[in-house]
Figure (cartoon, protein in one colour):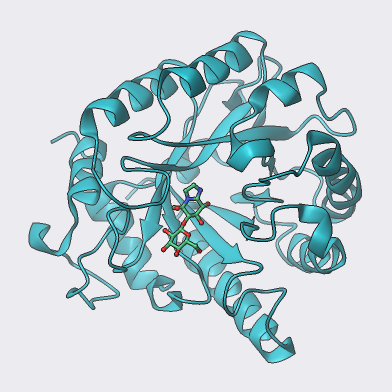
Length: 309
Ligand code: IDC
């Protein structure tokens, strides 16, 4: 099966702010994010990803490596870190064999400011960017969702340290940078962009039952200003990852992103008891194939949408 990666190869940020191939043609990725690699590593295997590629038509997978939550990279011991690096490696290699793009996500959340674990982030990105330097399909997301009182200046300070580490090893990979307020304040990046590198994109996240016109306006203004924007995580439900599945609002969002060739990946691959999980709790199948009854409503909606059903 010919995948988007087989067709377009390594991507970069074009002069208009879009993700483009070597001929300058815009390419948007559509995929899924894992849940915490510490909690749900079982899904990171070749059969599972092959099923997602062939049955769901995803072309990208995001490996969400939590940093501070239970057994996260920065709160566990060295053995835990080694295990997580292994899971990332398994995910990157499987994705590569299958012709999928893969995002390595430093998933800060309760550690609201990326400067808190800056040294560990520096070590981690040194390791992965040297290991995957020759891979054309790898993206680095350097901080998932800065939040609470983390400022854009803090994020820029962190980016000023991490981006050169990645670039020293990997000249061409696209780097994704989270924005303040749980990756919603694209406007701050518009008024004060990162200037040390031009192959990067700014991240927006939305949960369709919570974030509506106001955040869409922030996104529209950023696009109008030519800001490179990437949606590495969205939900059709509320911002807590739970409660109602709002297909109507989600549809408005995805059509808007599609009109601007913005990539999007849905949250989350797990069978956790919450609306945003792809699988129902009773489904303990980590490889597929899946019946529709194994899927939660948002996942079935997404799968049907991606496969044109
Ligand atoms: C949520 C998970 C939930 C977990 C919680 C805390 O769905 O199972 O208990 O994190 O670890 C985000 C975050 C993402 C959140 C998600 C839903 O990036 O980690 O996952 N969300 O709340 N931003 C907005 C929503």
